Image (tube, rainbow, N blue to C red; front, top):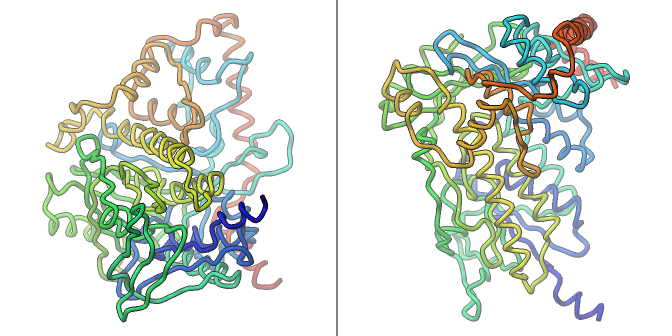
Length: 508
């Protein structure tokens, strides 16, 4: 029996494409599978550049690094990383309006009810400060402060949730060294053809320029937007979401910092699309995401260059995409991870998370040579759910705007949206309730941040809030606000804290 199982086990995995997707996959497989039982090969071409402008992340990336047992200080140093407490959205609701999407929570539940319902009641009476004053992440970001979670019970300092800004190219390089050290074979070459098995249509081998053939049991497509295996070879098909998310291009360019390092990403809406500003130790990452339907490429480039705080450090990097996802992320013996699986634009920094999530699903549903259809179907169902949930969350930012000052914003404000998002928006507007569907990526805090930040005001709040008198609610809210302010007072400056951490790494 064991021998039969052994004959069915995957002995070789071939990853086509490097970059963040390829090397995150290779590193995770090397850590979990080891190289005694399975040969992992990654094919990367020097002739093909990687996208790697996604320099902002969400907190889940910490888990990925922990699974790989990566030392955080070593990682910070190797990738030029800074800390991130959330995203500042500027000009999204209206010009000059700003709100913050924090990692972590607002306040704390009261009488077993979500905090924001108590805030909503008082806000309707005009008696409370902004929602952000009850979030340590939002207040700390405003003051450029950061600290790691502290071992203090019942304190928001214990619940600090953070992510990173880092250089994605350096991260891929860091993981490449990690993976190769653990037995991953790297082949430098360009795939020019793919061999298909006649009996079942599975991929048998890839053929490189120069004639080298590399066969495998399982193929992982990390070839970026072009989907070399999943689309060009297996013709899997693509669901286009451009109607809901019209931005289809981005340009990116770094410059030197002119201010202290901020522990957050800035997302600044323009007349068409939006710009990002991402602080790294050595530079600022800048980008402009826009729709070619509403602005010409050369005008978009001029706009980005005019907005830079200092001279550009490199040439402008240009990207094009169609928003959407493959009809199947796993087709036959090919699994697609990264941009080859789909793209929902970088607004909420989900790119690296979707890579990480696909790797986690691959580990859970790791196949045998039998490639059971039930595993494949589950992988595809879960992937689609995740992409659709993220898609809806991103659409919310565009749809719930009051801007009418450009053709682009008028389109977004009046476009039709998926029924799933419509339901969420209507429920919040009518009752103040937010329901998290299963284990969707963005939790109630995230939805609240954007629904409230984009100006949606609920007509009511949870009826059980009225069990407390307005005075009792005011006292509770004041206490929470004071706790946040006391916590803020003990937090150091983000840049100084980071410099001390890095200095400690160098001296150890």
